[in-house]
Length: 374
Image (cartoon, rainbow, N blue to C red; front, side, top):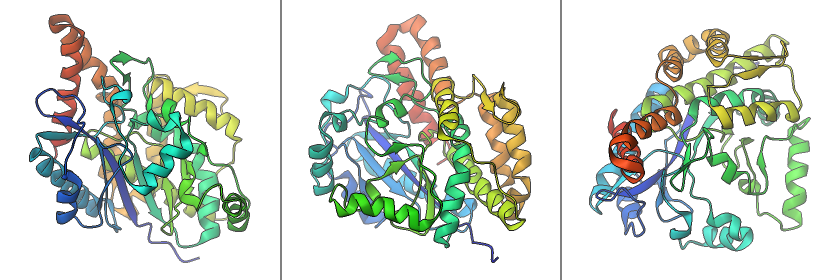
């Protein structure tokens, strides 16, 4: 069996904030058009006007993805400054109110607003998507079935949305609480073949309930546009290097599962009921509460799980040239997730300045993290 190239692509959604007040932008002007002029085909509007989306080219490895994603982040920051704005890479703005935001006047988003009603209005959230190139359609389905096991682990490390409308939600990733209100979200169902997947999607398309599989928003899916599998589970990461480490782990896990298959082995498939329990633990606690090891039937500390994951994909990280990025994931243990750091900033600032000042301090810290590696 010929090895796939395991090409990689990263998509990120950013929030635009006013440079003076640190509140969300309400009128970003022609920012998207200015960015498109520099990075044609790699920048687009998002559902809400205060959002912007970027996507790397198809990259042969994480080093190439780093160069492209850094250029994209810098492009958005540079052009946002023209409008008195600044981007942050975080899944929820700490104190914004979704009722103050307006969706982008574009046919796709107008249709979403009409079809989804009030659920769509609350979509003041951002995420990161990672594509890994897998040419074979049946292999894509087989790998999606197995890779689902690791989605809670990726979510736990990426968690960046503890605050919502100025309140600490008690969750590490409140984003999923909002996103899961949409239809066709959550863990992907398991399919026996590409044909079974196409028949399921085709049933909805034939009834004109959706136009194509791009309206299926599972945590992991075969891409609607590319010969890839697309992980959609992660919160967006304020720090560029953490985003790349998460992308590298997604790429390496995919290669590891392919490698098992080449040796006539595979990862055990668990029911979504069980994986969903880990998904909830990651959503609630991030890396702080541990996840279930279903082989041991025990909740295991995340630091131990991470070391096991690093060992599991070491051969693949060496082959793909991303061992440094994989080992960089240990930072979520030593420095905490973004959710942990945001709470720490708030706790430090609230004593001297009160709640509102502490909320702004959190946004300021997110601005600094966005620009630290540019």
